[in-house]
Image (tube, rainbow, N blue to C red; front, top):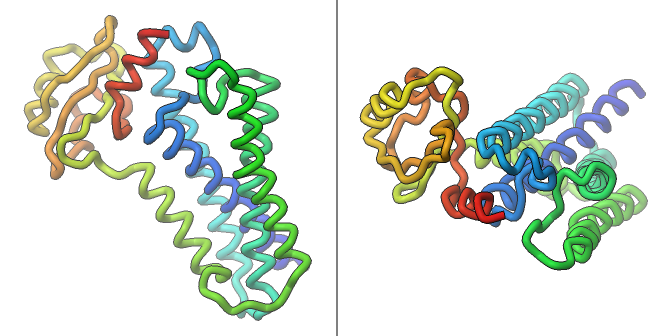
Length: 253
């Protein structure tokens, strides 16, 4: 029973982290519909704080994912046909729980952001997103728990769940492709001279900076070693697919 409980909690944690990665990659980076704290007026005035909290959010999802992997690994045992679908089911339920918690807590109780911040009817987007990715995932997970047909499909296996988590976590930290921009948040006290030296070190080009010069958008080659920027005063290096457009949206709102 202990192994089953650890296995179940591991699958739930991995599903929950996948929900967070899905939200962060799609809504924060690709579509750029919101930041974690876009709904707080004071936070929206500080771009560096928005970027930092987005980074902390992803960091928290990594912690949840690692916890899930640990629980799954320490409960490892020969996987029977009857165990595979409940594992996938619990991951689906965890994925749905993430969207339910995000909708209720982040969107409606705390009001720190909505699914889309730039629309006249944000509640409609909140409800639609919750229905498609939250309630549907919960219903699918519940259905799989009840069905228990003993499928041996690879998609129902622990390996598939682990791979999905590793892939999602990796996508969140991929270096920017050629022709794209990278956002750099500078540590307090970092001089522009030091950061310009960092740009030279990675063959980067400055595209944009905020009024405080704490947030820089730079273009870098595809093979740039972005980790070197930390040695020149970077606090956080983010690889959003279109950060300048996102920053412009923040400035206009």
